[in-house]
Length: 485
Image (cartoon, rainbow, N blue to C red; front, side, top):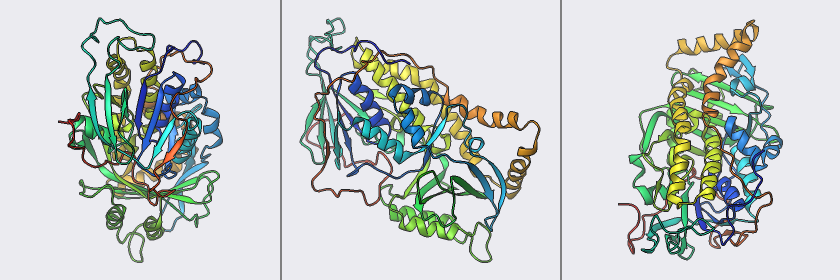
């Protein structure tokens, strides 16, 4: 396993602010701390978000998890799904397959609830990384290096050019006092605050894929035991599932639609849109699974309700000066790809490794990070565009054909070849990058950052309704120029 050798940093580490405490942010914090950086993570939510749907860890992401030392933690928290089935209006199973075929998982691939993975990463980093919960960045102001910090200036042992000690970013927050950091990382999701402040409005980079997704918890009245049930209607997909160790079930509703106008911070408005999209389905005299009204009722009550469009984020570059983007903030592939979490883990590994190996300034490290990740991202973006159409069939005829193929597959003599073919596209995306070996210390260094997890005193202890990762903050301060034009 990679991960032994001397640390490339021998002096006071550079300070890094990471916005976002979901997956990408804490994963990056883990690696940067091991490399000797002083890391602060700021998160808008007042506490760690426990909600979310199940996420796959595949291919290169499994290798990164192994190098991080969290693979066994993931195994212990695995959803341990056993089967997936399509059901008719009355809930009768009409086609059933093993969960690994449903999820296109092979070899060491695994699946975990997003909230469980966030908890694992937070537990691994909270003693060494400063966490600021209940706060958000409001402005970013670049601080230029001194004139002596030219490209030919000598490099100090910690990777700085002589004379660039003053370079960095001045950051203001909603609650905390302003601070200066050497680097700022936006790992704050699809609706990234850092991206908006450093690059401009998200509409420049958002590519809508034509569908919406809602996820939420609900009572397990169906008695599901590590299985997922799907019901398809033209342009609609309904799912209920349960995972190992969770007495509750999860609901997932997806629907095709022209782009809708709504506030991504307003869950009540989102619940109304969801109810309208599935209105009448499953009631007496109407088609659709009889469980749909109960699912909609659960969505109205759930405190972990999530709703958003299926979007890609496409950008010409992911860095600007001392600010860089990571995970969904840089290249969201949408839930349709099934690769967002894996890309976050892999991106954190690559970005940290390149920063630690940096000898010519962080801008060069950012360039190398992008060069490694671009092909990987492109493959998964293409996969998302295809899969978002597959999620919601257009006609009843297509749905019937899908059910027929699933019913006969277990009896086909060539079923293993068919299952392999089903998984090929997903596996191509999961393995579309070759990981470099970055030397890291065998034992994590002591971080000079305050090893604490802070919540803003005025914030509640737990979030009442977690917003999607990376919800945008207020407009930047007018007191000083910022990155955004």
